[in-house]
Amino acid sequence: MTDREKAYRPEDLTRLFVERANAKDAEGLALLYEEDAVMAFPPGSQTRGRKAIQQLWEQLLPKMPQFEPEQPLPTLLSGDLALTSTPPKDGSGARAQVVRRQPDGSWLRVLDQPEFVQPDVH
Figure (tube, rainbow, N blue to C red):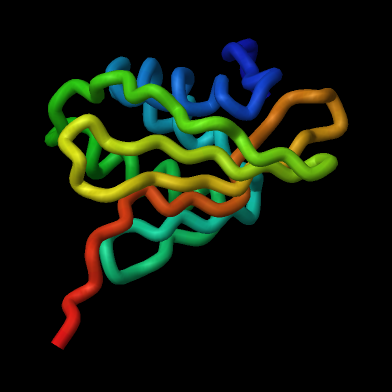
């Protein structure tokens, strides 16, 4: 593990994500996830595991613009699990993550839904 800042509140993960994404730090982003985490990205698929998540960010970050901090909604907490979410500034949907408290008291993402979009209704 590295000496990077850890999230000691579930809400810290959102701030750390933005900081590391803007620093183009794919490894740092991956370290915000548990080893077997699942991220629903790219749209329509799933990326499974910290290593695959890091590889995905290594591909995406060089092409991405700076991330803007978004104000998280109130966290839902139940024991060692929490649900964090943020409404995107552009009003395009929502982002949600299930996070788990680690033995050292820090929090990591387990499930990440980085974007919700309105389903097509036919």
